[in-house]
Length: 130
Image (cartoon, rainbow, N blue to C red):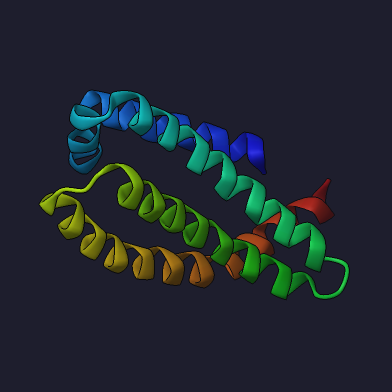
């Protein structure tokens, strides 16, 4: 979990550094170190939280474990970013970014929860074939 989250965080960092993530670039211009560390740390925490939720619940209910693990990632991702914005980025655009993040969070949450049963089915079929 944490390893995959770190990979995700590094991909986000590359997007920020190359200009593919414009809001990240605005953050980078104000606080390069904080932005860079945030990209990687929030990704790592997303993966670790999802893995922890899955491990905690998988023995009781596999489907619930997958759904809640899928929900944990956007909750942690958005929560950490909100916290970083509140602590280090007291600017008008940060307030606008927070509003956008709320919409993005809802989309990310719905997509994760909607797709996780299909991913579970694919993994289950693949495991049976091996």
